[in-house]
Image (spheres, rainbow, N blue to C red):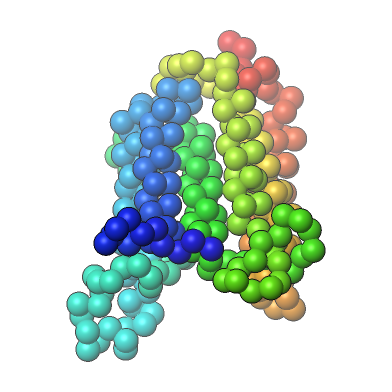
Length: 258
């Protein structure tokens, strides 16, 4: 939609700028969320930073490995340009490995890590969708609704599916802050239920499961199954099952009595 922002002689790719801004805000949110989940801000900030750095490096190295023939004669291409050429699953594996090592080093509890990283992850996902919208790499199915958008001056209107995803992310993020509103500062290792992990996860997964149907360029497998919907369905089912199992033991705002 708006692939570049021109400021005099300077041309800024809006999609890349949105991702950088999202990464910075995500780290800030994680740092501010740490006291509310019984974590040490420096530990969770270091964990999130390690995951982002390892994820980017891993995604790039995985792409280079899978397409080595294209880089064999141009080794400089491994490190420049960096505006494209990343393998999502490779980056995810590297990020998880970095998280595991950081958790071992700082002796972080899994519940604290998940609860502390979730608002940062949701923030980043909002900006990933915004980057997708600004760069125009994703687009929705055709629509006659008045809020439909025309891409690249084409006469056909399409669903602004990326903006739907932004709204879903904001709703999930808002639910996390609502659920922890009564927490000001928990002692390290505090015992609390998983509501602030499961409910926002269910909201985001359920929302993405719905709005993905409006995306025209979804990745599909088998007989047309959308990969994102399959993943969201699994997350939604797991979150609802765990919530139902944990509900009797919880109390208001997710903090156990005693």
